[in-house]
Image (cartoon, rainbow, N blue to C red; front, side, top):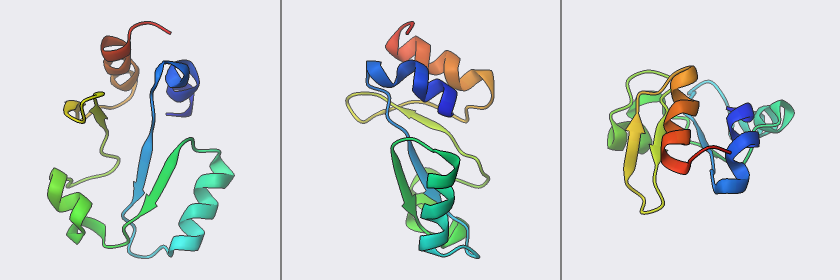
Amino acid sequence: MRGVFEKYGAKGLRILGVCLDKEADREKAVAFAKELGLPDLQAFDGKAFQGPAAHAYGIQGIPAVFLIDAEGKIAAKDLFGDGVEKAVEALLGKP
């Protein structure tokens, strides 16, 4: 994801990471994200698949990747590997 952000961040791409891990605590999750150099926003749920984020978006496994357009609508979901960058490019155009 970091590579995709580096390519498309200037075109408006923003990334939100949500930690669902019940075993993690907020401070450790935030520190881990910073250590990895994860871009943009990081949030903490801590309720695994029982939390509001998982329920709202039907998340049953991780990672779950959603591409949200400028109007706040889901443009693509269930993205993995090269599919992430292809979907971003389709939405934003080439970097």
